[in-house]
Each structure stands twice: as structure tokens, then as C-alpha cells.
Length: 399
Image (cartoon, rainbow, N blue to C red; front, side, top):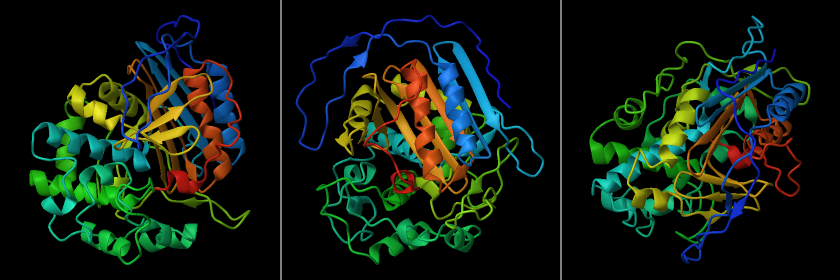
């Protein structure tokens, strides 16, 4: 079932590129791509086609919400529950996976604003003896340049058996770090980008050490309550999603095997790297506020937006992704994959337009790449285009 609603008409505008002089940065950082001064209206027809394709490719349901400077567009296809056949809704809550990383980064950057944290200090200054190399800094952790091995590579070598082994397990942060340290590091500190959940487990440990509070408390006091994010929760180690939600379905590795309902889980294997629950509305509110500078100082936001190139379309800052679209627009946010859910949540540089979308499946590369088309239709105002040379895999979003 599909629905679209617009709360206020949007005006079509020509895409005009403005070139801005950008100061030189360190070799690992990339200058922002030029951003159009005005965005065309979202292509809701193309967006609906993206959601329909995701369902045809194996997602039980898919939804997207665009908030555009006062206008709201809501579209959904398919079901939230394969048993009851309840339609998926843009009001549903869902597990956001690694979009959680942006929340964790915001807390640490706020602590840097409060002079409680130096981004270029060794992690071991704050967590003595945690890491085997004093050269690994907080900045390295937040930018995935620490070289710490991603322990979840081994957990989910087999999608279903790996998930069933951890879905009700409760880990300590230290246990997760220990799993990482059993393996060689991927690179020297600062030498290269290498995505690792271990980095944001360390981020969670830093939050709790520096504040004396749980990450749950810090998320609530610093982000959720100030922004009135009433659909956003950190329930770890509880396993249920509060209120109305869409169920998540894990695709097995064996072709043709039935989907596995992965909704109920502790997500203890991810915690501050991927355990938050939210909604499309709340994610749009969060990223719009972040990019408008409402959550930290301008200086800290500029540091968050110092990006290292990952591939032809993606760069990574401090807990923040930049995605460069075919129309010349760059958008900012994060992707998320946790068993049963693929999430895309991004906003324009000025925060005036934001989109959040989810398909309630995972371990399905076709759906993963199809959902990337949400960004093209939301910000470029045209049907999603095939992104040759930039197809993503589960590894790119694995949380």
C-alpha cells in the first residue's frame, strides 16, 4: 500500500551550482563538493518507484519521509508485519543501526565543546590501558582511522546462525573491545579509513567515563529531550521496540530460505555503535538540527564535517557521512544496517531538506542499493539513476 501526503506545496526551482573557495586541509580530508543554491522539488513519483522496487526485490516493506522547509512528503509500500499483513507506515519506529554513530559522535563533540575532551588526545589518556597503541586518538576513533579490527566481521560470517548466537546475548563494552584486540589491526593509526564497529564501542566507553552516566542518559539529556525526539529510544539490553513499529526481517544466506524475524534482539553486540531505535520524523529532526548548528559549536561542526574520501560517492567525517549525488548535490547523514533493517538518513548542507527511509530487511544487496535511490529522488528531483561503480555491499553498511 502506498500513501503520499504533502503538507505544503513545494516550488520547483532550477539547480544552480555555486562554487565556494575552500581552505586547504590535511591530506586525509576532502573539500566539500559544490552544492546547488536551490534544490528542485522532490520527485515523489521516482521515490515511490524506489520503494516499490525494494519490495519487489525482497523487502516486506519500505517507507520514506521527506521534510522540506515546512513541507512534508510521506510514502510507504508493503507491510510492517508479514504475519498480520499490517501496512508499513511512516509513523513506525525501527532499529536504525549505525545511524546511532552520529548520536554518539554528537555527544563526544559536545564534551569537546565543554573542554572535557581533546579530540587529538590518545584514547588511553581517558581510558588507561584500553588500547595497545597510545597513538590512537579520539579523532581516529570517530573517523574510522584507528586501525582497530571490526569484531563483528567474525560474528556474522553466517547471517542467520551468527545472529541467533547473539540476539539475546548481553556484552560489556570491554568484551567487545577484547574481541577486536584478538585480531591484528588493519592499519597504523591515522593511516587509512577502515570502517569498524569497535571504534564506536570505544566512543561509548569514552562517553560513560567522561560523564559518569550511561550512554542512554547522555543521549536523552543532550539530544532526545532538547529536540523532542519522542520516537527515539536506547533500550539496551531490553529486546523490544516500544510503541508502533515495523518488524525487521533478516534474509538468510541460502537462496530461497524463508526470512527470519529479527525484530526482537538486544543489539548488545553493537550498543553505542548501532542500538538506537527511532522514526523517520525523528531522524529528519535530528540531522536538520545537527546541520543547522543547533547541537554543537560551529567550530566542532566544522570538525565533524572534515571528510576523508571513502569511494567515488562517499566520504566520512566524525560519525557523519557525506554522499555526493549525480546532480552535484552533497548530502550529509549516515546509513544503517542491523539485522532486519536498512536505513538511509541524510539532510542538505543547510539542514532545510532531510529524508529518512527504511526497508525492513537486511542481507539483501539488491534492496540495499535500490534504497540509495531515495537520496537521488529526494534531493535531485529526478528518478533514481544507476550508480555505476558505486554499488554497495553489506560490508559498507554493516553495523
